[in-house]
Figure 1 (cartoon, rainbow, N blue to C red):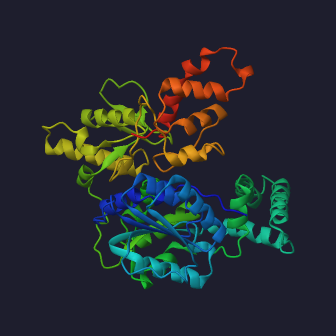
Figure 2 (cartoon, rainbow, N blue to C red):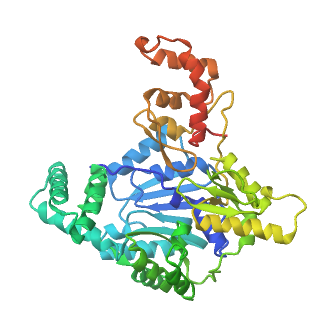
Figure 3 (cartoon, rainbow, N blue to C red):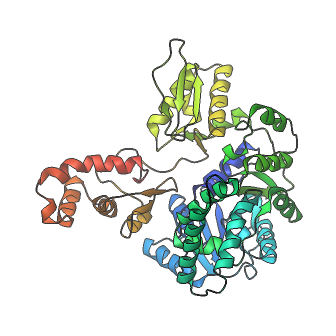
Length: 485
């Protein structure tokens, strides 16, 4: 049962390098970086990275030959020369020491046996170059206990079933039975029903490979950190910076945790309080000193992007509230902060270098205010920070172009990979057909002719409809970060 491949924005070298920069680690430059993915599957994640960094090199390793074959077919179809895949187990793979700047292992650590987990971290340490960064995701306790309860029930119910399709049918039947049988008035039933409903929403492939896998071992964060330390690695950060913030907690708990000097202890208690089930942790060599209090002035070397917009008219006192799609807000009266965030919002899905948000003549305290505000916005998940802006455009050119990966994916379904290394959905068939045509060789007239030939005659009662809607469709694709600069 093939496991679906997706891009994961949190694994992109841009994200890893950005967080390294904030914590005082000058990680390798992206332009010619070397990236290794352990457990790469069909290489969709690596291929998307390789298209965004054409002068960098990428290696993927996976034990599943069928997945690697699909990945090689994808690479060959796109004509990529900077991606190589190997069919090997982690025990068989022997990288040259220091041969990769970034190592990614998404969805591996908790789903392999203990000796292989040990080998995974050994490979991270061996493969990483000087100041390199590794990304490792894993199921985490205490929240993972709830997932384990359901997993134990599913394994019990399907123990005698060997056929994958039948195991899935039985698993889904049990989840439906449990949801129907648990009473919302009972604390245990109300809690478990929510988790069972989430499992029912998952695809067959992820339910089969994640919940019904032979191995699925959550660990406490302190156990993972100690395991990494035994291999000469130290905790750098979480791939989502906002997950590290104590300010989301009630004030007494937030104040107490903020006073904890040891970041490992602080992170462990955050897991206790949030009931976290999954972590995406960045590691680096234990020998490098880190700055655990990110300094706002570092943002002068970074770029910022965000879809956030003013939530309403500016108040009489000059204060404005900027709101993001997730509900995060920043209220400020500083004119340069307001102007900067408004410019960032209108640049979405592109971004702006922080230094370009500031006037040529600016007081130090104003520069610090803008950088501090942007860092607080990053901590609140209101903006994204980057060491390298994605090569996209927010307006369609005369001969618009989508990435080769998106064009290929649009031929088979609604989910495509955008230029921000994210999955987006193109719902209608005509829109997907348009994506497949955007190879940079067609102007508007050629696109209209191709689309008219694609649409059945019964749908062409108003011949000008496609031509009139083309610019609107291209604007929509640009807003999804699907058009290349």
